Amino acid sequence: MENRVSVIQGDITQLQVDAIVNAANNSLLGGSGVDGAIHSVAGPELLSECRKLQGCDTGQAKITKGYHLPAKWVIHTVGPVWEGGNSGEDELLAQCYRNSLALAVQNGIKTIAFPAISTGAYCFPLERATKIAVNEVNKFLHSNNSLEQIIFVCFGQNAYNCYLRVVQEITQS
Ligand code: AR6
Image (tube, rainbow, N blue to C red; front, side, top):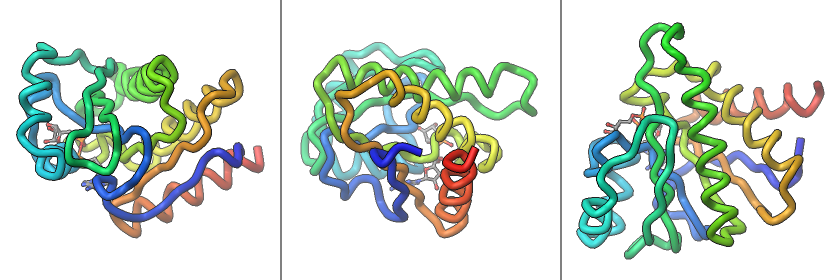
């Protein structure tokens, strides 16, 4: 596994990185979970900018400034709602990571932090989502030299253990 990838446990809103990724919804107008936390730290200016974006399709990504966050940018992506696994959820989740990373590169971002997209309110099974996240980041880094650090931010011990295990599995394969 790439030494540009790390796993930490904590609150993504506190990270001093170029960009944090938001697990948003199609409206981009805020919500609960990590989305609510990001908007509450960034302040109302973030919602004002998001209103101008006219929403975001599932699997796609859009960028805003970070306002009062320590991060300079927020990349908003919309993960799939888990519907049992036969509705294209895996591919849509993979697209979230690919499109977020591509947008980061386009904007000269060097350090980026991801939450575990879709694994909260959207009920995507954690281990399955983690494998997709780690695989997509790993593949992307193989063809990219500009990104310097990708951080997977886990909110709880359970997610942290899962990410560590999956990163190790992929390293050894
Ligand atoms: N830092 C890092 N991770 C966090 C934080 C935080 N501050 N808060 C929660 N998580 P979720 P989703 C983790 O529900 O499943 C929103 O209402 C959380 O433990 O935030 O993609 C949106 O507006 C979980 O592992 O996002 C959408 O409507 C992960 O972040 C919907 O929820 C994702 O959980 C999106 O659902």
